[in-house]
Length: 423
Image (tube, one colour):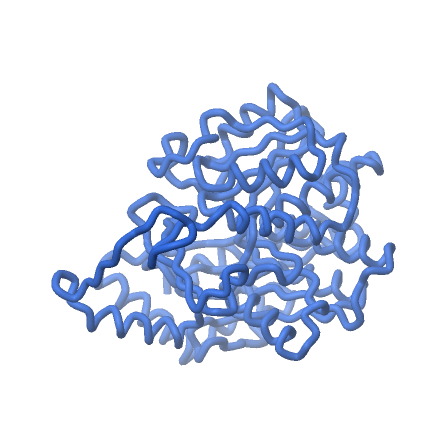
């Protein structure tokens, strides 16, 4: 979009879901996903079009220079890879041993080109998931957030013994990872954990090298880990939180650009495995995330540490933050009505307690469409209807002085939130 100077763009994808979820994402001239207000106008135009008699056709010239419809040339892809490489903090990754899976999606060409230019020589691609295949034969949900999608790669890790397993979802905007677990196996890193690892690494590296901009800004979402707050404070970074959806993070980049200070933006992430550094695009970028994860893992390896060691060090410094996600599915029209009634009830009267802990504050976002409850012990529950499926998402957040205390607090909060969703 930005490279070609287009007025609008459409990405047809099921993203990280099965094929029956196929749909399209619409992007504006700034390269950012359009906001709900603009999407409503697009939908209104669609609904005015007759699906049989209202369709307009044009010729397709398969050359890249003529015709109303044209292939995008490789120069665009190469320019994109170069833009990602320009954002490298600059640590050597040549000794890094990697296993990579594109989950039968579109990431293979971009990611392998990037890793080759970065100097990675020990790369093993998961063979069963290497080639694009919209049927996703190895897993029904090709989502790097879930273990099942990464299972084939994890099995290969038992043979190859890499420093890092990386997986990108089929449209290559999300990235999942696993690292050695000190017991001969591999542990998956959550989206929140990877976000904190990359945020801390980027801030430390840019500070040490004198490349941190004046008044730096990082952006995350209201449902992402609260651990980002103390990390930002430690490095003197302004942290902005947005509604869920990377388009809102992209919107913040656009605002900084409009002010003439896009260099202030240094990093954005969301708990659902989306990351972005730099202003080269306006959406989460799996290729950019791969670059950062490799550099981060290689830097810690030079210190004799894995990413798991790095996480433990950060928890020891800032406290043990734990997060979880619960979902409640509402089937059919009656289910949607029940979901609406539950949200209305929560808006009218917030719970006074979650379990045995008092609720001391309630915050409403998006006109009451998202509700956030704070407990007196520092726990947090956010209730949000999914934007794409008939279900409620319940985000849980706690902080403890030790891993065991944080885990206990999370389990208690999870049980209380589950009872809340049952009315």
